[in-house]
Image 1 (spheres, one colour):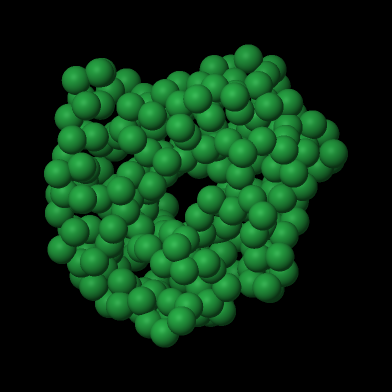
Image 2: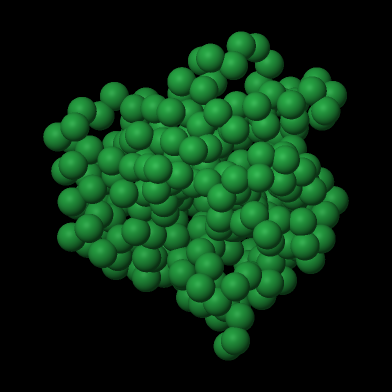
Length: 261
């Protein structure tokens, strides 16, 4: 099992500093948050994209995922969603990232309607993503926070370039046990995100193992060659303990929970 770190935990930090922190504390990969104000965003020109890719390569850090905010099941016209998906796939390919994370964002619409939108849009970009060497991963989140809901959408697309991303917190909040989530997503899984919180009424990020989420139970289910990423949501919780001081013990915690130990 390989360890990655989401840059959501280090908002606004230059990529070179993020890479240094990851390498110094035993993290092999990064989920690169893609939005304005971060070191990775859609407006990077070709030279900046190449420089970021070379920085990651020199450090031996894998760009596991480009973490987008595209909502594939969002209400509205397909065209803007598909265009944004294509832009994010191109950026991921330029950076050498393995995947693009997307959200469902189906809102309060019936799941059947949200599913239709997501399946239709994902199917349009699937072949292009495959040619670019990038997978589009639908995260267990918002309208589809249960693994069974994401798995249903991905199975309908039925394309190797479209998969699922297991965010443990959201499946737990949806009432699924890790074994239930794993059973639903295993055939489609790209990678897994873990985090810890005090409870459903307080989502402030905590050090791994300091809260209520069944992290060890989740990690024990994962394949030995899979990736697990720590998504410490510091960007949404500015009062949380700064992530850099937690990185070393976080890597050790996940390493102790690895299958086969």
